[in-house]
Length: 223
Ligand code: HEM
Image 1 (tube, rainbow, N blue to C red):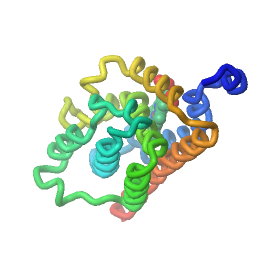
Image 2: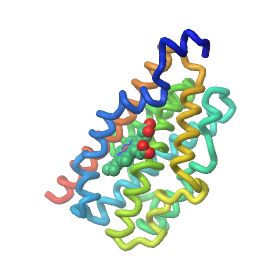
Image 3: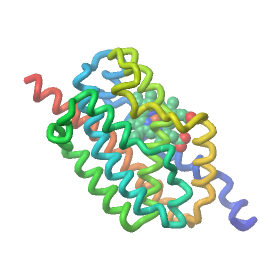
């Protein structure tokens, strides 16, 4: 970055991104389904249904990461320490059973979310990073807390909540700091930064709408 750019753009991109997405974050955080689960008003089945949807999302995200590994812009963000799919599969085996693959289906929002990850994950590093950021930085923030609450509420030890346990990330706060430095160092001009922010907002919308789908599925199964 040149000195003049530094003067005219004093807010680091990672800070701008967090600020510009904080309203969308609150929307996801306070969605009824999630809030109920955290307050003890959700069932074990609700939790399992969320794990199932996560499997589809991370299968897409981590397949995209494999494709993006050789992309110079995306590569710095990709780390095996984050990989969640094996943990999700072990969780599903424990929660659903050996035949979990035959027993799970994506909800409509999950399908749209996955389609979008596949689409940008094939061609656009900035868009891929937007989806990567929204999930993994969330997992390393509120996710750690959610994991603890689920553990307490449903009596899990580690089976069933492996998704929330990042064995290889010793210091999540430090990991997130390094990640934010990488966001600040990405070679994106102002227009590309806007597009990345928009994609993060879209990712939040998918997450919020997924909670709405989960709430609706719950109502219709109770009816
Ligand atoms: C009830 C659910 C949630 C709670 C309690 C929660 C809580 C938090 C907290 C406390 C932070 C700040 C951590 C820090 O600055 O180090 C955070 C950051 C974050 N959360 Fe959440 N969160 C929730 C749901 C979500 C969801 C559904 C998503 C999106 C999938 C998400 C994505 C993020 C991201 C991307 C950040 C990092 C923001 C940044 O520093 O750039 N969170 N969350």
